[in-house]
Length: 382
View 1 (spheres, rainbow, N blue to C red):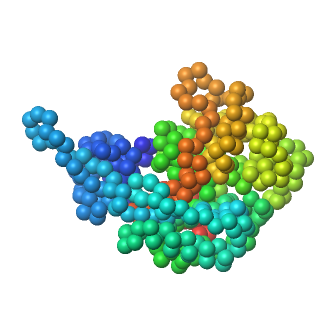
View 2: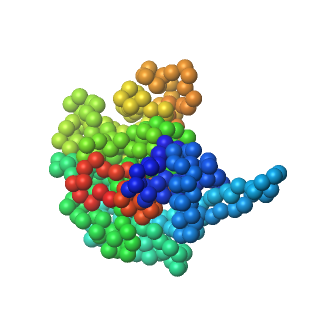
View 3: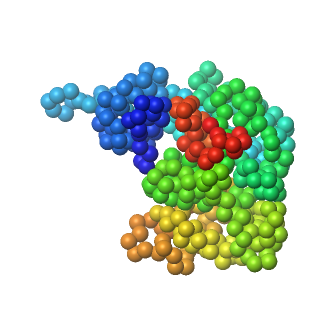
């Protein structure tokens, strides 16, 4: 657990979320263990737990007596305490899933709507949300989280080109999502949502510092330090796909040439028309350079490879990155491989998007776990 509570007066909503997250991550657990984990007093934790229990978010159980004295009460998440819907809109189509409070995918649905317009997209999202809500009629729905490709609020790069949602600029995204869902709505870049899901429900939970390398239609990534994504001044840190890596290389819609995602991305894979093994072999130099550059810049415990890739392609890429060149991560005392593959695959994005809604509803003052750097990023600030 990298996140810590705060004893400042205004921090109760934040602490509620942190305590709930600690119970989800380590339960069954006790008040004392949680207090030690998140850096709060047992009294503060007990007050928060009482509130969470009264609201049905957690369950408490008495342990069997093992000697003198009263046995401690153990706490765990109530999976049916609430549900959230995670949605991912990409140039390939729209995916959505209903997820319970413990992070279990109850059901999912997809629409193959390539490069859909906002009006068409939100019409589809409305129908998909209706399908998913019908899986748990009458249940408490906490909110909906929408993930879509970035960057945002950069005139020459946002919503421009085949790796972004062309035509989705200047759309009131959160307002539209709230309208079609009838629930509190939260918006995030897909790579940050995926890193959030990885930290909560995937292999990222094992590390305080990891880099999530997102290979989707484009290419991006997020450094997660002690549970918090490093977002940059305007919330667009991690757009490594637009690093010019090949001198005088392929032109990129961003205006530069030789950008990394012109070679390492699902868009590049589709344009090359090669099989998985052949394409992976052809981009091996760029992939290895990407990994060592990330290591030298961020010094993560590990890099987690995820995104929209099929499992077979992710495995091929990981194999191509074996025997990496030297970097600051080439340490003899390493406890984890330099590159590992996400365990939840594309579901990680939906898990993270749904978790944004849970975090935002429980902690309205702080909103999303991955807070953007500037409030003026349209549609993103919680």
